[in-house]
Length: 139
Image (cartoon, rainbow, N blue to C red; front, side, top):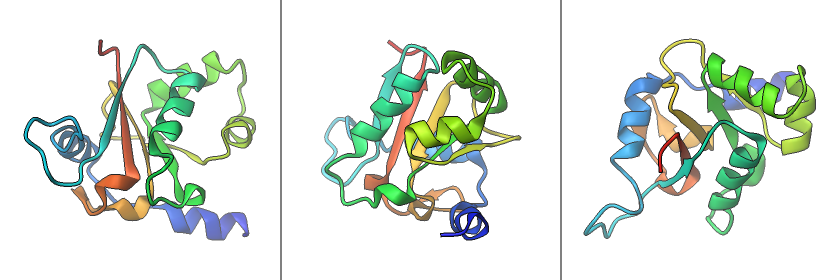
């Protein structure tokens, strides 16, 4: 697949603050929940291993791994590159096997999303099983 095709396949238009808020209320750990929910993982910090953990959390779900994309804030993108000891996103994407997208405005600093872009419509959750949210600094 050409890079331009891949880019257009994963672009989404969302209010990420609102999306992350919606994701956090749809946790699969929600008490009394009998509906399909998103996966939420607590991450100590922004790290390559944390991103791998989010990918692993979606294994076994009916999700096309080739569609999964990471969404993170500019600050978290810098932290990730530092943790991975690289300055090159392309190298990191190759190591992860997934695209990384930096959300310039509105992405909370305490969250990283790993999801199929089709799992959301605007800021609304269309397919909870195709979303994993890493909450940074949570215990």
